[in-house]
Structure formats: C-alpha cells, structure tokens
Length: 284
Length: 264
Ligand SMILES: Nc1ncnc2c1ncn2[C@@H]1O[C@H](COP(=O)(O)OP(=O)(O)OP(=O)(O)O)[C@@H](O)[C@H]1O
Ligand SMILES: [Mg+2]
Image: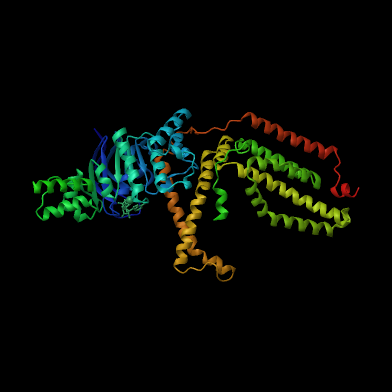
C-alpha cells in the first residue's frame, strides 16, 4: 500500500530562478526502507521538506505537480497535521532540541498536540526505551554526545507515532561508530515497528544493507530508483558520483577481469563470503 | 567560558531546590520588602545572617560565595558613596564618624541581603522550573518558550563563539591589541560569523519546531505541573510571618544602633 506519492513534482525557492528539483515522480510503500542519495546540492533536503509540508507552508515558493502523503494532499493540510504522519529528523542534532532535559524534549511534540499528561508520560517513556536512551532522560542536551543527541531527536519524532520517518543526513555530524548505532536504531524502527523510513545518506557503505530501495538524485532529478543491488551495479550510478559501496565496486572490478561472483554484494561481509565460496569452488 | 557556567544548571535535589519556584519568589519579595523597610544595621545584619542556613541546606555555598564576591565591587562603591555623602551632610544628626560608618554599612548590607536572596532563588531554581512557573502564572507560552530556549542555547553559543575566536586567531586575528576602540573593532570578525550562525540556527529551530506540530492545539499540555506541597505552604506562612514581624518591629520597636550597644 502506498504512503507517499509524487507526480511531476517541481519546486522553486522564492528568490531562486532555477527549480531545486523538477519532475520528481516517486511512490513509496508502507513499511519500505528507502535510501535517498545523490551529490551535494541535488535537492534531497528540499524534497524531504515537501514530505511534511515545510514546503510549501513554511518555505513559500512555487510548488507544481502533485504530492500525497498518508492520503493527504500536502498543500491542503497544515504542517502540524502532516507532522503527525511524517516525522522529520534533521542533520544538526543540536538545533532540533529545545528543552533543558531529554525527557522534556521528547515530550515537546506531544505537548503541542495537547495530549493528556498520562499519555504523554507513557509515550515518552516508550520512545526513550525504543531508542535506548531511557537512562539519559534527565540529562541536559549539552551533556550528551552528538550521537546521543541525534537519538533524542529520533525519540522525539518517534513519540508522535508517525507512519513515516524521514531522516536528512542524520549521521553527518557523527563518527562511523555513532553512525552505525543510529542506523541500527532506524532499522529497528523499520523492522520491528513497521515504520516507513526515508533515509538521506552519503555513507552508503554503512547504510545500504538496511535499504529495500535506493533512489539517486542528480541536479534536481531522480536518475535511478530501484533495488540497491540493481542501482549500485549500474554504470549510471558510478557516473553520478555517489559513494557506491566498496563491495559492489569490487564485484564490478572482478567482473571486468572476467571473474563472475554470481550475486551482487553490498556489504564487505557478503563480498568476502562470496569470494570464499568462489575460491573453494575453483579448487574443487 | 566561566561566565556562562551559571547557565549549566546542575540537577540537584535539596529541600530548597524542590520548593515551588513561585513560593521561592514570594520569599525573595518578602526579604526585599524587609530590607527596604529597615535602614539600621542591626536588623539588616540579622536578615543577612538568617538566610545563611538556607544556603547551607541547598548546598550552594560555593556558588553563593562567588556571586557575593562578584558583587563586592558594588558593595564597596555603595559604602564609599554613603560615607562621602553622609560626611558632607553631617549637619543632619549623623554627626559622629562611628554612626556614619554604621549607617553606610547598613546600606551596604541592605544590598548584600538582596544579592543573597536573589542568589538563593536563581541558584536553586532550574530554568525549566522557572519557565513552568511563568507558564502557570499565566504568561503566554510563546514567551516562556522563548525564555527557556534562550537559556538552553547560552552554552551552545558560548562554545561557538570560542570556536570562532580560535579559528580567527589561527588566521592571524589579534584580539588583545590597541586601545579600547581598536579592541572593540577587533571583535567584528568574531561577531559577524556568530550573527550569521545564529540566524541560520534560528531558522533550523523554527523548522524543527514546525515539524513537531508547533501550534497544533490551542490548549497545550505540559508534561510537568507545579503542585504546592505541604512544605511549600509552610514556607509561605514563614515568609508572611517575616513580613508582618518586620513591619511590626519597624513601627513599634525602636532599634538600637550597634555602636550604642557596644559603647553602653
Ligand atoms: N532555503 C533555501 N533557499 C533558497 N535556495 C535553497 C534553499 N535551500 C537550498 N536551496 C538550493 O536548492 C538546491 C538544492 O539544495 P538541497 O539543500 O536540497 O540539496 P541537498 O541534496 O540536500 O544537498 P546536501 O547533500 O549538500 O545536503 C541547491 O541549489 C540550493 O542552493
Ligand atoms: Mg541536504
């Protein structure tokens, strides 16, 4: 069942003459884990802003085409209504935490919705536990590492129980280990809770294995859209210049040299497994 | 950076910290009124000493000492100007030097009592509690939110300013050079990036707020509520007794000066 659909979506920022992205037509199904990537400035962030109505309600400018999210036409519904269906996690964790304690921050959205206090309490505790930061609930934001802050940001979105969570480069301020932890949390939300995930990411080596689908944008257009293996193996992906996983690159190199591994690997583990198999096969 | 440490409120628990901020504020007002009622040294000294147990119970002795030390320059100025003006007008009945000193000391202690009670209030009230108190006193939520968010970002901005200063110094900026005007000008390359960053930050904050359903419901809930406890009522009663007592003493009891007591 589809949860997001855009048709020939084109958007131009107010003072800009050129569209930030154009003719984007994509469909995202409920429960999917979609990885959105592409070179800097290709319009990924701008597209994400459309999913919860920041565009066109917060940023004015010109939005053409159709966009439906959770059965709602985005231009017809205010952000606070859309925000209950689509949660947006931003790049800089520091600038999305307002309160003086973790717990209060996670409660912020629910307080805005005017939910009863007992329910807020229940949902906050739940979100803190799912993201593994329950022990931090009384800390102040400046007492947390970047990775912990980002998990607070995810928890505060999760507490609003959206169907879709969009994360715009959530790990770009983090080290690889911190990034890995964030990906694991996101994967848990997707696999255990069935939340649809749209993850904007440059670290394809780490993130690819979780995705059901990869969408690559370039210069404001969607250029590739499909299963991770199919997308990464295509020559076009290499031309666009996204960081194709090293395992897939290795596969391509081997294939050019006449060695066929059978399946396209995405992670280092997969690749080493396949190479080991191929070697024993050779000897046998 | 030290200057901003005060904004890093540490979550500690003590009978004073746990007190309702509104009650604490009432207490500060009462002390304020009492300090203004009296102009003799003895009662002001009593007020000053009587608050010390609160500081000890709250465990903020060190922080309190620091704010007292911070205001000591002011205290000296107050003492000196009082001495000077009383001496010049000594025709009025404050003739002898000891009584001029005593009166100047009284004015200084009046100031110190105010510093002391404000310190107790701010050192033991978390900004969160303060915001909540404002909210429950009927201040519009937008304002309360602006207040707590501003406090939340003080340490962040301080850190950012330090980073910018370091980066500009690495590029050859010399902050501590030249006369006063020159020094102020030196800060321009620090202030501009700081300003630009703040604007960007506020935009990002606004986006994040919108994404969390800001303004969804006209009747916003708050996770916390301030509820008066038994001890809070005791504190209210104590504050009122202090007020009544102070007024009574002021009106009906003649207060001896310490100098008289000593010389008698
Ligand atoms: N608030 C804005 N106002 C005007 N133009 C903008 C705004 N934000 C982005 N743009 C422009 O829109 C285009 C797409 O930017 P966008 O931020 O969506 O790219 P991105 O894919 O997210 O890049 P990155 O990987 O660097 O985050 C860029 O040309 C950018 O200059
Ligand atoms: Mg971006």
